[in-house]
Image (tube, helix red, strand yellow):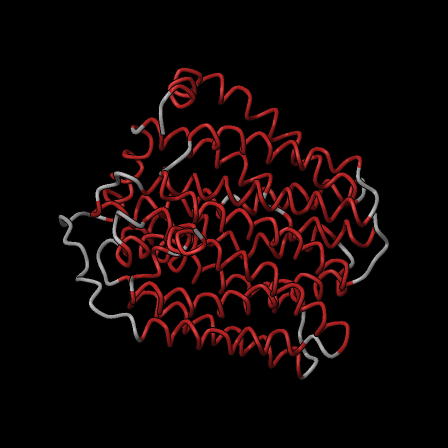
Length: 412
């Protein structure tokens, strides 16, 4: 029984290429979360402004908003492995620059914003490439399991990364956080070096960038399942994925705590996400679960709305786990909805839309959450986002009520 559990949960790791890629990712994204945690705390200490923390987040994600659809046309034309080698090398260089600035105590807020913009440009190409690369590594049979395990690596990092960052910031020096981030990219570069024979880039018809983008968007808007998923993501990802902006302000102004509590709250979100990722890895053998998708969309917004009642550290940790769990399952099911039955020659462009909705909408939500908290307090960050998302979700679900009924009645 235990053997079957392991086989079902980690079936995509039977692919040697995916194993090499996945283990490199596990190490690299831990470094990324150490860096994100330290950077957010550093900016909040430097500025004492929730809005300026939101500006930092916006700078990292604005390039995604602008460039991701263009990146999708590039991804469909060139080797995904080579694109990842370039982007990961770029991340390493930016991490080294940030380390030097902090080490020599010459770092300025505007410099952090410029580096965040650089990260955003690279992420515009890196994120949709990684999402669509999974299909090449595992094939259609293990696609959902590969998606889930790829997510589990990211969410394992959300647990471990902030905890390590909290220890380093509390016991040692924040410089170590940025140094570890820079070094961690060597792991994914090494993993990519051992990925072999993934196939040539998909041959697609010659067309302009605008025509390529239009073709991908036409598929998304004229495929009912994908369109509904896109609308759900537009709302929930914009408003429910601003945790990095809200938590440091909540920790300081509501819980009256420091960097360790901030890191622990982030880790609690990661714990919930990790549980969800491994749960979905095991359930991947059953395919997508549309009823779960609808339910978890509502749970995601209601759990954040409930934070208006939370004033204690222990209860906040519990709700953070629930938020992480619901957000992870929502993204997992959205990813599957985008990837299944997609023509391979469109995969890069379709996944660029997914990344655009997942991360490109973050600047809007970050500025909204930061502005609300500056006008009120950290207590209102989560509920202001959750309640607005609920209000916006209701008419979308009403518009797609026939599709929802089909999902509920259908056998998975």
